[in-house]
Length: 621
Image 1 (cartoon, rainbow, N blue to C red):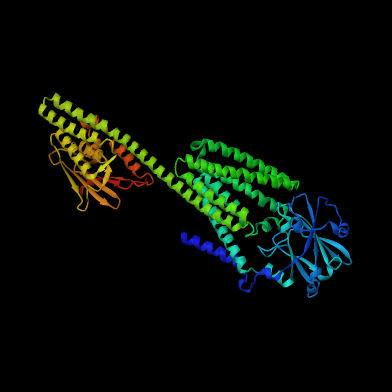
Image 2 (spheres, rainbow, N blue to C red; image 1 turned 120 degrees about the horizontal axis):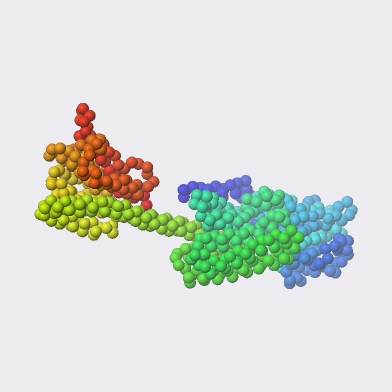
Protein backbone atom coordinates (compact mmCIF):
# COMPACT_ATOMS: atom_id res chain seq x y z
CA UNK A 1 0.00 0.00 0.00
CA UNK A 2 2.83 2.38 0.82
CA UNK A 3 4.44 1.69 -2.58
CA UNK A 4 1.09 2.43 -4.20
CA UNK A 5 0.98 5.86 -2.56
CA UNK A 6 4.50 6.65 -3.74
CA UNK A 7 3.68 5.58 -7.28
CA UNK A 8 0.51 7.67 -7.30
CA UNK A 9 2.32 10.79 -6.13
CA UNK A 10 5.08 10.27 -8.68
CA UNK A 11 2.52 9.77 -11.46
CA UNK A 12 0.71 12.99 -10.59
CA UNK A 13 3.99 14.88 -10.70
CA UNK A 14 5.01 13.38 -14.05
CA UNK A 15 1.60 14.02 -15.61
CA UNK A 16 1.74 17.62 -14.49
CA UNK A 17 5.03 18.18 -16.26
CA UNK A 18 4.24 16.22 -19.42
CA UNK A 19 4.35 18.30 -22.58
CA UNK A 20 6.52 21.08 -21.23
CA UNK A 21 10.01 21.36 -22.68
CA UNK A 22 11.83 22.69 -19.65
CA UNK A 23 15.21 22.55 -21.36
CA UNK A 24 14.10 25.12 -23.93
CA UNK A 25 13.51 27.77 -21.29
CA UNK A 26 15.35 30.83 -20.16
CA UNK A 27 14.31 33.20 -17.44
CA UNK A 28 11.22 34.96 -18.80
CA UNK A 29 12.03 38.20 -17.02
CA UNK A 30 15.01 38.94 -19.28
CA UNK A 31 12.70 39.13 -22.32
CA UNK A 32 10.33 41.78 -20.99
CA UNK A 33 10.82 45.53 -20.83
CA UNK A 34 9.27 47.79 -18.22
CA UNK A 35 7.37 50.82 -19.48
CA UNK A 36 6.84 54.05 -17.51
CA UNK A 37 3.25 54.51 -16.36
CA UNK A 38 1.19 57.21 -14.75
CA UNK A 39 -2.05 56.67 -12.88
CA UNK A 40 -5.22 58.62 -12.28
CA UNK A 41 -7.54 57.51 -9.49
CA UNK A 42 -11.24 58.37 -9.53
CA UNK A 43 -14.54 57.19 -8.13
CA UNK A 44 -16.35 58.34 -11.28
CA UNK A 45 -16.80 55.25 -13.42
CA UNK A 46 -18.52 57.13 -16.26
CA UNK A 47 -15.58 59.15 -17.58
CA UNK A 48 -14.97 58.79 -21.32
CA UNK A 49 -11.65 58.12 -22.99
CA UNK A 50 -11.78 61.48 -24.78
CA UNK A 51 -11.96 63.24 -21.43
CA UNK A 52 -9.06 61.18 -20.14
CA UNK A 53 -6.73 61.82 -23.09
CA UNK A 54 -7.18 65.57 -22.63
CA UNK A 55 -6.45 65.45 -18.88
CA UNK A 56 -2.76 64.67 -18.67
CA UNK A 57 -2.43 66.83 -15.57
CA UNK A 58 -4.53 64.34 -13.58
CA UNK A 59 -2.04 61.52 -13.99
CA UNK A 60 0.65 60.94 -11.40
CA UNK A 61 3.55 58.46 -11.19
CA UNK A 62 2.62 55.21 -9.41
CA UNK A 63 5.17 55.99 -6.72
CA UNK A 64 3.02 58.98 -5.67
CA UNK A 65 0.26 56.70 -4.34
CA UNK A 66 0.74 55.62 -0.75
CA UNK A 67 -2.76 54.30 -0.13
CA UNK A 68 -4.07 50.88 -1.09
CA UNK A 69 -6.70 50.09 -3.67
CA UNK A 70 -10.42 50.02 -2.93
CA UNK A 71 -13.06 48.08 -4.87
CA UNK A 72 -15.01 51.33 -5.42
CA UNK A 73 -12.07 53.15 -7.06
CA UNK A 74 -11.39 53.23 -10.79
CA UNK A 75 -7.82 53.60 -11.99
CA UNK A 76 -6.75 54.94 -15.37
CA UNK A 77 -3.25 53.85 -16.37
CA UNK A 78 -1.41 55.81 -19.07
CA UNK A 79 1.37 53.80 -20.72
CA UNK A 80 3.98 55.90 -22.51
CA UNK A 81 6.03 54.19 -25.25
CA UNK A 82 7.99 57.30 -26.24
CA UNK A 83 11.30 55.66 -25.32
CA UNK A 84 10.41 52.37 -27.06
CA UNK A 85 9.14 53.58 -30.45
CA UNK A 86 12.20 52.41 -32.34
CA UNK A 87 12.03 48.98 -30.70
CA UNK A 88 8.32 48.66 -31.51
CA UNK A 89 9.01 49.18 -35.23
CA UNK A 90 10.83 45.82 -35.33
CA UNK A 91 7.53 43.95 -35.24
CA UNK A 92 3.86 44.63 -35.75
CA UNK A 93 2.40 42.71 -32.80
CA UNK A 94 3.35 43.00 -29.13
CA UNK A 95 1.89 42.02 -25.77
CA UNK A 96 1.41 43.92 -22.54
CA UNK A 97 2.38 42.03 -19.43
CA UNK A 98 0.90 43.20 -16.12
CA UNK A 99 3.17 40.94 -14.08
CA UNK A 100 1.15 39.08 -11.41
CA UNK A 101 -1.76 41.52 -11.41
CA UNK A 102 -4.96 40.08 -12.74
CA UNK A 103 -7.53 42.86 -12.79
CA UNK A 104 -11.13 41.78 -12.41
CA UNK A 105 -12.59 44.68 -14.39
CA UNK A 106 -10.29 46.09 -17.05
CA UNK A 107 -10.25 47.44 -20.59
CA UNK A 108 -7.60 48.72 -22.97
CA UNK A 109 -8.03 51.74 -25.24
CA UNK A 110 -6.15 51.89 -28.55
CA UNK A 111 -6.49 53.22 -32.10
CA UNK A 112 -8.24 51.15 -34.75
CA UNK A 113 -9.62 52.47 -38.06
CA UNK A 114 -8.66 56.04 -37.10
CA UNK A 115 -10.72 56.00 -33.90
CA UNK A 116 -10.16 55.04 -30.29
CA UNK A 117 -11.77 51.72 -29.39
CA UNK A 118 -12.17 49.85 -26.13
CA UNK A 119 -11.47 46.16 -25.59
CA UNK A 120 -12.36 44.36 -22.37
CA UNK A 121 -9.78 42.04 -20.86
CA UNK A 122 -10.66 41.86 -17.15
CA UNK A 123 -11.21 38.39 -15.75
CA UNK A 124 -14.81 39.24 -14.84
CA UNK A 125 -15.41 41.08 -18.14
CA UNK A 126 -13.90 38.56 -20.50
CA UNK A 127 -13.09 35.22 -18.83
CA UNK A 128 -10.91 33.03 -20.98
CA UNK A 129 -8.76 29.97 -20.63
CA UNK A 130 -5.00 30.39 -20.51
CA UNK A 131 -2.54 27.70 -21.51
CA UNK A 132 -0.20 28.42 -18.63
CA UNK A 133 -1.06 27.74 -15.01
CA UNK A 134 1.40 30.32 -13.70
CA UNK A 135 1.44 33.07 -16.32
CA UNK A 136 -1.64 35.11 -17.30
CA UNK A 137 -2.42 35.84 -20.92
CA UNK A 138 -0.84 38.99 -22.30
CA UNK A 139 -2.81 41.88 -23.84
CA UNK A 140 -2.12 42.06 -27.56
CA UNK A 141 -1.58 45.42 -29.28
CA UNK A 142 -0.21 46.52 -32.63
CA UNK A 143 2.56 49.01 -33.23
CA UNK A 144 0.23 51.27 -35.21
CA UNK A 145 -2.51 51.20 -32.57
CA UNK A 146 -0.90 53.68 -30.15
CA UNK A 147 -2.94 56.75 -29.25
CA UNK A 148 -1.11 59.87 -30.41
CA UNK A 149 1.53 57.41 -31.65
CA UNK A 150 2.86 56.85 -28.13
CA UNK A 151 0.15 55.99 -25.57
CA UNK A 152 -2.05 53.12 -24.51
CA UNK A 153 -4.67 53.62 -21.79
CA UNK A 154 -5.95 51.04 -19.34
CA UNK A 155 -9.07 51.40 -17.22
CA UNK A 156 -8.94 48.96 -14.28
CA UNK A 157 -10.63 48.13 -10.99
CA UNK A 158 -8.98 46.02 -8.33
CA UNK A 159 -11.76 44.32 -6.35
CA UNK A 160 -10.08 41.14 -5.11
CA UNK A 161 -7.55 42.58 -2.69
CA UNK A 162 -6.43 45.71 -0.91
CA UNK A 163 -2.99 46.34 -2.41
CA UNK A 164 -0.46 49.11 -2.91
CA UNK A 165 -0.79 51.05 -6.19
CA UNK A 166 2.88 52.00 -6.01
CA UNK A 167 3.82 48.37 -6.71
CA UNK A 168 2.05 48.29 -10.09
CA UNK A 169 4.32 47.73 -13.06
CA UNK A 170 3.65 47.23 -16.77
CA UNK A 171 5.92 45.41 -19.23
CA UNK A 172 5.77 44.63 -22.91
CA UNK A 173 7.08 41.51 -24.62
CA UNK A 174 7.42 40.20 -28.14
CA UNK A 175 5.09 37.64 -29.66
CA UNK A 176 7.79 34.95 -29.39
CA UNK A 177 8.35 35.65 -25.69
CA UNK A 178 4.61 35.62 -25.02
CA UNK A 179 4.27 32.23 -26.73
CA UNK A 180 7.20 30.95 -24.71
CA UNK A 181 5.59 32.14 -21.48
CA UNK A 182 2.19 30.66 -22.27
CA UNK A 183 3.28 27.31 -23.72
CA UNK A 184 6.42 26.35 -21.79
CA UNK A 185 7.68 26.38 -18.22
CA UNK A 186 11.10 27.42 -16.98
CA UNK A 187 12.94 25.49 -14.29
CA UNK A 188 11.88 28.15 -11.78
CA UNK A 189 8.28 27.51 -12.80
CA UNK A 190 8.75 23.76 -12.34
CA UNK A 191 10.12 24.29 -8.83
CA UNK A 192 7.01 26.34 -8.07
CA UNK A 193 4.69 23.65 -9.44
CA UNK A 194 6.30 20.61 -7.77
CA UNK A 195 4.90 21.40 -4.28
CA UNK A 196 1.49 22.07 -5.82
CA UNK A 197 1.35 18.71 -7.58
CA UNK A 198 2.63 16.85 -4.54
CA UNK A 199 0.04 18.57 -2.37
CA UNK A 200 -2.65 17.71 -4.92
CA UNK A 201 -1.74 14.04 -4.64
CA UNK A 202 -1.76 14.20 -0.85
CA UNK A 203 -5.19 15.86 -0.80
CA UNK A 204 -6.78 13.46 -3.26
CA UNK A 205 -5.41 10.38 -1.49
CA UNK A 206 -6.48 11.62 1.95
CA UNK A 207 -9.93 12.56 0.64
CA UNK A 208 -10.48 9.12 -0.88
CA UNK A 209 -9.21 7.26 2.20
CA UNK A 210 -11.10 9.29 4.80
CA UNK A 211 -14.34 9.40 2.81
CA UNK A 212 -14.15 5.64 2.21
CA UNK A 213 -13.56 5.10 5.93
CA UNK A 214 -16.58 7.28 6.70
CA UNK A 215 -18.74 5.13 4.40
CA UNK A 216 -17.62 1.93 6.14
CA UNK A 217 -17.48 3.18 9.73
CA UNK A 218 -20.17 5.93 9.69
CA UNK A 219 -17.95 8.06 11.93
CA UNK A 220 -18.91 11.67 11.21
CA UNK A 221 -15.46 13.11 11.95
CA UNK A 222 -14.08 11.30 8.90
CA UNK A 223 -16.73 12.92 6.70
CA UNK A 224 -15.89 16.40 7.96
CA UNK A 225 -12.18 15.73 7.59
CA UNK A 226 -12.58 14.56 3.98
CA UNK A 227 -14.61 17.71 3.19
CA UNK A 228 -11.98 19.83 4.94
CA UNK A 229 -9.24 18.30 2.76
CA UNK A 230 -11.13 18.77 -0.52
CA UNK A 231 -11.90 22.43 0.24
CA UNK A 232 -8.27 22.97 1.23
CA UNK A 233 -7.30 21.61 -2.18
CA UNK A 234 -9.78 23.90 -3.95
CA UNK A 235 -8.39 26.94 -2.15
CA UNK A 236 -4.68 26.24 -2.49
CA UNK A 237 -4.47 24.15 -5.65
CA UNK A 238 -7.64 24.66 -7.65
CA UNK A 239 -5.56 26.19 -10.43
CA UNK A 240 -3.45 23.04 -10.84
CA UNK A 241 -6.36 20.96 -12.13
CA UNK A 242 -8.06 24.00 -13.69
CA UNK A 243 -11.23 23.69 -11.63
CA UNK A 244 -12.22 27.25 -12.61
CA UNK A 245 -12.05 26.40 -16.30
CA UNK A 246 -13.76 23.06 -15.80
CA UNK A 247 -16.70 24.39 -13.78
CA UNK A 248 -17.07 28.01 -14.88
CA UNK A 249 -15.20 28.37 -18.18
CA UNK A 250 -12.50 30.62 -16.73
CA UNK A 251 -11.77 33.13 -13.97
CA UNK A 252 -15.32 34.41 -13.58
CA UNK A 253 -16.95 36.19 -10.67
CA UNK A 254 -18.56 32.88 -9.68
CA UNK A 255 -15.22 31.06 -9.69
CA UNK A 256 -13.71 33.85 -7.60
CA UNK A 257 -16.59 33.52 -5.13
CA UNK A 258 -15.90 29.78 -4.90
CA UNK A 259 -12.20 30.48 -4.32
CA UNK A 260 -12.97 32.98 -1.55
CA UNK A 261 -15.76 31.05 0.11
CA UNK A 262 -13.48 28.00 0.17
CA UNK A 263 -11.60 29.69 3.01
CA UNK A 264 -14.79 29.76 5.08
CA UNK A 265 -15.68 26.16 4.27
CA UNK A 266 -12.15 25.10 5.24
CA UNK A 267 -12.62 26.67 8.66
CA UNK A 268 -16.19 25.39 8.99
CA UNK A 269 -15.32 21.76 8.34
CA UNK A 270 -12.17 22.13 10.43
CA UNK A 271 -14.11 23.14 13.57
CA UNK A 272 -16.73 20.44 12.89
CA UNK A 273 -13.93 17.89 12.61
CA UNK A 274 -12.43 19.07 15.91
CA UNK A 275 -15.86 18.97 17.57
CA UNK A 276 -16.45 15.30 16.78
CA UNK A 277 -12.84 14.13 16.83
CA UNK A 278 -12.40 15.29 20.44
CA UNK A 279 -16.02 14.52 21.41
CA UNK A 280 -16.12 18.06 22.81
CA UNK A 281 -19.75 17.87 23.93
CA UNK A 282 -18.80 15.24 26.51
CA UNK A 283 -15.10 15.86 27.12
CA UNK A 284 -14.72 19.65 26.63
CA UNK A 285 -18.16 21.31 27.03
CA UNK A 286 -16.75 24.86 27.08
CA UNK A 287 -14.92 24.29 23.82
CA UNK A 288 -18.06 22.66 22.41
CA UNK A 289 -20.05 25.80 23.19
CA UNK A 290 -17.44 28.08 21.56
CA UNK A 291 -17.27 25.87 18.47
CA UNK A 292 -21.05 26.14 18.09
CA UNK A 293 -20.71 29.94 18.21
CA UNK A 294 -17.95 29.77 15.57
CA UNK A 295 -20.14 27.55 13.37
CA UNK A 296 -22.95 30.11 13.61
CA UNK A 297 -20.58 32.96 12.72
CA UNK A 298 -19.15 31.10 9.72
CA UNK A 299 -22.63 30.18 8.50
CA UNK A 300 -23.67 33.84 8.62
CA UNK A 301 -20.48 34.82 6.77
CA UNK A 302 -21.23 32.30 4.00
CA UNK A 303 -24.72 33.74 3.54
CA UNK A 304 -23.58 37.39 3.67
CA UNK A 305 -20.61 36.85 1.36
CA UNK A 306 -22.80 35.10 -1.20
CA UNK A 307 -25.19 38.06 -1.07
CA UNK A 308 -22.30 40.54 -1.43
CA UNK A 309 -21.06 38.75 -4.54
CA UNK A 310 -24.55 38.67 -6.00
CA UNK A 311 -24.87 42.46 -5.71
CA UNK A 312 -21.11 42.91 -6.44
CA UNK A 313 -20.48 44.67 -3.13
CA UNK A 314 -16.79 43.78 -2.97
CA UNK A 315 -15.93 46.19 -0.16
CA UNK A 316 -18.29 44.26 2.10
CA UNK A 317 -16.78 41.00 0.88
CA UNK A 318 -13.22 42.04 1.72
CA UNK A 319 -14.30 43.36 5.11
CA UNK A 320 -16.22 40.25 6.11
CA UNK A 321 -13.38 37.98 4.98
CA UNK A 322 -10.96 39.93 7.18
CA UNK A 323 -13.40 39.53 10.08
CA UNK A 324 -13.47 35.80 9.42
CA UNK A 325 -9.66 35.61 9.46
CA UNK A 326 -9.50 37.54 12.73
CA UNK A 327 -12.15 35.35 14.38
CA UNK A 328 -10.46 32.12 13.29
CA UNK A 329 -7.01 33.36 14.36
CA UNK A 330 -8.28 34.21 17.83
CA UNK A 331 -10.16 30.92 18.06
CA UNK A 332 -7.15 28.96 16.81
CA UNK A 333 -4.70 30.51 19.27
CA UNK A 334 -7.14 30.37 22.18
CA UNK A 335 -8.21 26.83 21.35
CA UNK A 336 -4.62 25.59 21.20
CA UNK A 337 -3.79 27.02 24.62
CA UNK A 338 -7.04 25.65 26.08
CA UNK A 339 -6.34 22.14 24.81
CA UNK A 340 -2.73 22.26 25.99
CA UNK A 341 -3.82 23.11 29.53
CA UNK A 342 -6.92 20.91 29.76
CA UNK A 343 -6.07 17.91 27.55
CA UNK A 344 -7.56 14.70 28.95
CA UNK A 345 -5.67 12.35 26.64
CA UNK A 346 -3.35 12.47 23.64
CA UNK A 347 -5.96 13.34 21.02
CA UNK A 348 -5.85 17.14 21.61
CA UNK A 349 -2.10 17.18 20.97
CA UNK A 350 -2.69 16.09 17.38
CA UNK A 351 -5.13 18.99 16.93
CA UNK A 352 -2.74 21.49 18.53
CA UNK A 353 0.27 20.33 16.49
CA UNK A 354 -1.60 20.26 13.17
CA UNK A 355 -3.27 23.62 13.77
CA UNK A 356 0.03 25.22 14.76
CA UNK A 357 1.74 24.00 11.56
CA UNK A 358 -1.17 25.26 9.44
CA UNK A 359 -1.11 28.63 11.19
CA UNK A 360 2.65 28.97 10.66
CA UNK A 361 2.16 28.34 6.93
CA UNK A 362 -0.65 30.92 6.80
CA UNK A 363 1.47 33.54 8.55
CA UNK A 364 4.39 32.94 6.20
CA UNK A 365 2.01 33.33 3.25
CA UNK A 366 0.73 36.60 4.70
CA UNK A 367 4.19 38.08 5.34
CA UNK A 368 6.13 36.70 2.35
CA UNK A 369 3.38 36.20 -0.24
CA UNK A 370 4.59 32.70 -1.20
CA UNK A 371 1.93 29.98 -1.34
CA UNK A 372 4.61 27.28 -1.01
CA UNK A 373 4.80 28.00 2.72
CA UNK A 374 1.05 27.58 3.05
CA UNK A 375 1.17 24.34 1.06
CA UNK A 376 3.97 22.98 3.24
CA UNK A 377 2.13 23.91 6.43
CA UNK A 378 -1.10 22.37 5.15
CA UNK A 379 0.65 19.17 4.04
CA UNK A 380 2.24 18.78 7.47
CA UNK A 381 -1.11 19.48 9.12
CA UNK A 382 -2.84 16.84 6.98
CA UNK A 383 -0.11 14.36 7.92
CA UNK A 384 -0.52 15.10 11.64
CA UNK A 385 -4.32 14.87 11.46
CA UNK A 386 -4.04 11.57 9.55
CA UNK A 387 -1.83 10.23 12.33
CA UNK A 388 -4.35 11.54 14.84
CA UNK A 389 -7.21 9.73 13.12
CA UNK A 390 -5.15 6.53 12.99
CA UNK A 391 -4.36 6.88 16.69
CA UNK A 392 -8.04 7.38 17.52
CA UNK A 393 -9.00 4.31 15.49
CA UNK A 394 -6.38 2.31 17.37
CA UNK A 395 -7.60 3.55 20.75
CA UNK A 396 -11.22 2.80 19.88
CA UNK A 397 -10.18 -0.67 18.75
CA UNK A 398 -8.35 -1.27 22.03
CA UNK A 399 -11.38 0.01 23.95
CA UNK A 400 -13.68 -2.22 21.91
CA UNK A 401 -11.50 -5.24 22.67
CA UNK A 402 -11.55 -4.31 26.35
CA UNK A 403 -15.35 -4.17 26.41
CA UNK A 404 -15.58 -7.40 24.43
CA UNK A 405 -13.30 -9.08 26.93
CA UNK A 406 -15.32 -7.73 29.85
CA UNK A 407 -18.51 -8.93 28.20
CA UNK A 408 -16.97 -12.34 27.55
CA UNK A 409 -15.81 -12.67 31.14
CA UNK A 410 -19.18 -11.65 32.56
CA UNK A 411 -21.13 -13.91 30.21
CA UNK A 412 -18.79 -16.79 30.89
CA UNK A 413 -19.17 -16.30 34.63
CA UNK A 414 -22.94 -16.18 34.27
CA UNK A 415 -23.02 -19.38 32.21
CA UNK A 416 -20.61 -21.17 34.53
CA UNK A 417 -22.76 -20.09 37.47
CA UNK A 418 -25.65 -21.99 35.89
CA UNK A 419 -23.63 -25.22 36.16
CA UNK A 420 -22.46 -24.79 39.75
CA UNK A 421 -25.91 -24.92 41.46
CA UNK A 422 -26.74 -28.08 39.52
CA UNK A 423 -23.48 -29.72 40.56
CA UNK A 424 -23.84 -28.61 44.19
CA UNK A 425 -27.42 -29.89 44.32
CA UNK A 426 -26.40 -33.33 43.06
CA UNK A 427 -23.50 -33.52 45.50
CA UNK A 428 -25.58 -32.49 48.52
CA UNK A 429 -28.26 -34.91 47.44
CA UNK A 430 -25.67 -37.72 47.39
CA UNK A 431 -24.43 -36.77 50.86
CA UNK A 432 -28.04 -36.80 52.08
CA UNK A 433 -28.57 -40.30 50.67
CA UNK A 434 -25.40 -41.57 52.35
CA UNK A 435 -26.46 -40.11 55.68
CA UNK A 436 -29.98 -41.54 55.39
CA UNK A 437 -28.53 -44.95 54.56
CA UNK A 438 -26.40 -44.66 57.74
CA UNK A 439 -23.15 -44.86 55.74
CA UNK A 440 -21.45 -42.19 57.84
CA UNK A 441 -17.92 -43.08 56.80
CA UNK A 442 -18.70 -42.66 53.11
CA UNK A 443 -20.67 -39.50 53.86
CA UNK A 444 -17.72 -37.93 55.71
CA UNK A 445 -15.28 -38.96 52.98
CA UNK A 446 -17.61 -37.60 50.30
CA UNK A 447 -18.11 -34.37 52.23
CA UNK A 448 -14.34 -33.87 52.61
CA UNK A 449 -13.72 -34.34 48.90
CA UNK A 450 -16.70 -32.14 48.06
CA UNK A 451 -15.48 -29.32 50.32
CA UNK A 452 -11.98 -29.55 48.84
CA UNK A 453 -13.35 -29.32 45.31
CA UNK A 454 -15.61 -26.40 46.23
CA UNK A 455 -12.65 -24.61 47.81
CA UNK A 456 -10.69 -24.94 44.57
CA UNK A 457 -13.67 -23.72 42.57
CA UNK A 458 -14.18 -20.70 44.81
CA UNK A 459 -10.48 -19.81 44.70
CA UNK A 460 -10.65 -19.86 40.90
CA UNK A 461 -14.02 -18.13 40.63
CA UNK A 462 -12.47 -14.77 39.68
CA UNK A 463 -10.76 -16.28 36.63
CA UNK A 464 -12.71 -17.40 33.59
CA UNK A 465 -9.96 -19.69 32.36
CA UNK A 466 -7.26 -21.88 33.87
CA UNK A 467 -4.22 -23.65 32.55
CA UNK A 468 -4.92 -27.15 31.30
CA UNK A 469 -2.98 -28.82 34.12
CA UNK A 470 -5.19 -27.09 36.73
CA UNK A 471 -8.32 -28.06 34.78
CA UNK A 472 -7.19 -31.70 34.81
CA UNK A 473 -6.66 -31.55 38.59
CA UNK A 474 -10.20 -30.22 39.04
CA UNK A 475 -11.58 -32.97 36.78
CA UNK A 476 -9.73 -35.65 38.76
CA UNK A 477 -11.22 -34.37 42.01
CA UNK A 478 -14.64 -34.27 40.41
CA UNK A 479 -14.25 -37.84 39.10
CA UNK A 480 -13.10 -39.03 42.52
CA UNK A 481 -16.21 -37.46 43.98
CA UNK A 482 -18.50 -39.08 41.40
CA UNK A 483 -16.75 -42.44 41.78
CA UNK A 484 -17.30 -42.30 45.54
CA UNK A 485 -20.88 -41.18 45.01
CA UNK A 486 -21.64 -44.27 42.89
CA UNK A 487 -19.64 -46.82 44.93
CA UNK A 488 -16.68 -46.96 42.54
CA UNK A 489 -18.81 -48.64 39.89
CA UNK A 490 -16.82 -47.20 36.94
CA UNK A 491 -13.20 -46.70 35.95
CA UNK A 492 -11.74 -43.57 34.37
CA UNK A 493 -8.52 -42.41 32.70
CA UNK A 494 -7.22 -38.99 31.63
CA UNK A 495 -4.72 -39.00 28.75
CA UNK A 496 -2.61 -36.20 27.24
CA UNK A 497 -1.11 -36.09 23.76
CA UNK A 498 2.66 -36.54 23.93
CA UNK A 499 3.58 -33.10 22.55
CA UNK A 500 0.95 -31.25 24.59
CA UNK A 501 2.26 -29.01 27.38
CA UNK A 502 -0.62 -28.61 29.88
CA UNK A 503 1.12 -25.72 31.65
CA UNK A 504 1.30 -23.58 28.49
CA UNK A 505 -2.36 -23.63 27.42
CA UNK A 506 -5.42 -22.01 28.96
CA UNK A 507 -8.99 -23.21 28.55
CA UNK A 508 -12.29 -22.11 30.14
CA UNK A 509 -12.77 -23.66 33.56
CA UNK A 510 -14.91 -26.84 33.76
CA UNK A 511 -15.72 -26.60 30.04
CA UNK A 512 -15.84 -30.41 29.64
CA UNK A 513 -17.36 -31.29 33.05
CA UNK A 514 -20.99 -31.47 31.79
CA UNK A 515 -20.03 -34.06 29.14
CA UNK A 516 -18.22 -36.17 31.74
CA UNK A 517 -21.28 -35.96 33.97
CA UNK A 518 -23.57 -37.04 31.10
CA UNK A 519 -21.27 -39.97 30.27
CA UNK A 520 -21.46 -41.19 33.87
CA UNK A 521 -25.16 -40.60 34.54
CA UNK A 522 -26.69 -41.57 31.20
CA UNK A 523 -24.11 -43.95 29.79
CA UNK A 524 -22.25 -45.89 32.44
CA UNK A 525 -24.75 -46.06 35.33
CA UNK A 526 -27.44 -47.51 33.08
CA UNK A 527 -25.15 -50.36 32.02
CA UNK A 528 -25.24 -53.74 33.70
CA UNK A 529 -22.07 -55.44 34.84
CA UNK A 530 -18.75 -54.10 36.04
CA UNK A 531 -17.09 -53.23 32.72
CA UNK A 532 -17.74 -49.48 32.86
CA UNK A 533 -14.93 -47.34 31.50
CA UNK A 534 -14.60 -43.62 30.90
CA UNK A 535 -11.67 -42.18 28.90
CA UNK A 536 -10.86 -38.47 28.67
CA UNK A 537 -8.23 -37.44 26.11
CA UNK A 538 -6.70 -34.03 25.34
CA UNK A 539 -5.05 -33.27 21.98
CA UNK A 540 -3.90 -30.12 20.23
CA UNK A 541 -4.44 -29.01 16.64
CA UNK A 542 -3.38 -25.54 15.45
CA UNK A 543 -5.11 -23.06 17.80
CA UNK A 544 -7.56 -25.59 19.20
CA UNK A 545 -7.59 -28.06 22.09
CA UNK A 546 -9.55 -31.19 21.20
CA UNK A 547 -11.05 -33.04 24.15
CA UNK A 548 -12.56 -36.49 23.66
CA UNK A 549 -14.93 -37.91 26.30
CA UNK A 550 -15.53 -41.58 25.49
CA UNK A 551 -17.53 -44.17 27.43
CA UNK A 552 -18.56 -47.77 26.82
CA UNK A 553 -22.03 -47.30 28.25
CA UNK A 554 -25.47 -48.06 26.85
CA UNK A 555 -25.39 -45.38 24.18
CA UNK A 556 -27.61 -42.37 23.68
CA UNK A 557 -30.49 -44.21 22.03
CA UNK A 558 -30.83 -46.79 24.82
CA UNK A 559 -30.30 -44.19 27.52
CA UNK A 560 -33.30 -42.20 26.35
CA UNK A 561 -35.50 -45.29 26.69
CA UNK A 562 -34.39 -46.29 30.15
CA UNK A 563 -36.55 -44.99 32.95
CA UNK A 564 -33.96 -44.83 35.68
CA UNK A 565 -34.27 -42.98 38.95
CA UNK A 566 -31.12 -41.06 38.27
CA UNK A 567 -32.50 -39.74 35.02
CA UNK A 568 -35.69 -38.55 36.58
CA UNK A 569 -33.96 -36.51 39.21
CA UNK A 570 -31.14 -35.09 37.06
CA UNK A 571 -32.26 -32.77 34.30
CA UNK A 572 -28.92 -31.25 33.34
CA UNK A 573 -28.66 -28.11 31.24
CA UNK A 574 -24.86 -28.40 31.22
CA UNK A 575 -24.44 -29.33 27.54
CA UNK A 576 -26.53 -26.40 26.30
CA UNK A 577 -24.70 -24.00 28.59
CA UNK A 578 -21.34 -25.32 27.37
CA UNK A 579 -22.39 -24.78 23.75
CA UNK A 580 -23.03 -21.13 24.58
CA UNK A 581 -19.69 -20.84 26.36
CA UNK A 582 -17.87 -22.24 23.32
CA UNK A 583 -19.75 -19.86 21.04
CA UNK A 584 -18.61 -16.94 23.19
CA UNK A 585 -14.98 -17.85 22.55
CA UNK A 586 -15.35 -17.10 18.83
CA UNK A 587 -18.78 -15.73 17.86
CA UNK A 588 -17.61 -14.98 14.30
CA UNK A 589 -17.46 -18.70 13.46
CA UNK A 590 -20.49 -20.87 12.83
CA UNK A 591 -18.47 -24.07 13.25
CA UNK A 592 -20.02 -26.78 15.39
CA UNK A 593 -17.56 -27.22 18.25
CA UNK A 594 -19.30 -30.26 19.73
CA UNK A 595 -19.61 -33.58 17.89
CA UNK A 596 -21.42 -36.69 19.21
CA UNK A 597 -20.41 -40.09 17.84
CA UNK A 598 -22.59 -43.10 18.64
CA UNK A 599 -20.38 -46.21 18.74
CA UNK A 600 -21.84 -49.52 17.50
CA UNK A 601 -20.61 -53.04 16.79
CA UNK A 602 -20.89 -54.88 13.46
CA UNK A 603 -24.52 -55.75 14.24
CA UNK A 604 -25.48 -52.16 15.03
CA UNK A 605 -25.69 -52.65 18.78
CA UNK A 606 -24.60 -49.59 20.86
CA UNK A 607 -21.12 -49.71 22.35
CA UNK A 608 -21.19 -46.33 24.03
CA UNK A 609 -20.75 -42.68 23.09
CA UNK A 610 -17.82 -40.51 22.08
CA UNK A 611 -18.03 -36.72 22.38
CA UNK A 612 -15.45 -34.48 20.66
CA UNK A 613 -15.21 -30.93 22.04
CA UNK A 614 -13.15 -28.34 20.12
CA UNK A 615 -11.94 -25.57 22.43
CA UNK A 616 -10.35 -22.47 20.79
CA UNK A 617 -7.21 -21.26 22.55
CA UNK A 618 -7.14 -17.90 20.72
CA UNK A 619 -10.20 -15.75 21.24
CA UNK A 620 -11.71 -13.42 18.64
CA UNK A 621 -11.11 -10.25 20.66
